[in-house]
Length: 430
Image (cartoon, rainbow, N blue to C red; front, side, top):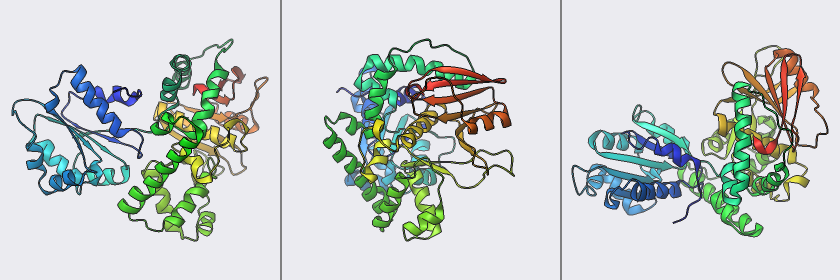
């Protein structure tokens, strides 16, 4: 079977020889089951593992779930036909299993010649139910909807190659301050056309496969409704779905803005603790991410409410029902900022904050590389020359960073402000 390439597959392969359980978490319909199928095919076709020694079990199947919960040792042992051979158990939707962490620990300790690879849709239950039992026994990974690079691999491998080459240059600049020169970019506008589709409908695998806009919208509706029905109602027992959906719609329109809990409480006819809990649920189930303020000066810099971003732009656009072209939208700045956050979060896995002072000077992101902080400002507009905002000047004057990034529509450039090097980089290469 032909599969779309996923970068996480290469990471998981590195740990297949070790004993530890591999757990792959992520939002519903992000491709976790398909990833297990890819692992199964790789074990069979590339590594030469006997197909009988690769057991694929889904716990959405009630018969599997019932037997596993009743006696996990006996159930797993029933598949072991040859005692001295290695077996691979691919366990899909493990979070449906009651006390799954305790059961996995027991199986891990009992069976010395089995490699367990499990998936789950929500870190909320997987973290709480497995962490205390599986310390030192687990490697955890997260599979999100397709990144922009993975999206390009599906749509145009040539553009994906060009993107990856320039993104690596940008990555080294952010990580190490390694300078570079781009005299002319022949392909930035070509890649921008792909970004338009990606930021409108997002990166869920089935959405990418869809052939037209109406089909994409229907699939996003299904993703959203399945999430509400299975995660929110059935698993987390939140039954006031009208109020919950209203909160999600409000948050969609607040992308990139500081949260005001009092306003959300009033608009949703709710109460403070409920709003806080639901936002936490949305974060733990991979719908949103929150970003805290960066502060060193406790007098002049904010230290309170976070800003909010959606993990997938398509799912962000669905609740507000707006699938118009990214380039003509009134909220294109917020969508661009959401994209940049996800790219930074995906590529670097470092702490990301935003900076805002009591006098309202603001920088979109500050990426903390421990030894240094790199501010990143998103300005999705046409640049004719290098221009730095007053807010970014204020951050530079306050902290004197070595390097600064201004994210543009399609403009490359550089500017020095004292000892600080400011690089202007097109959004598609973040």
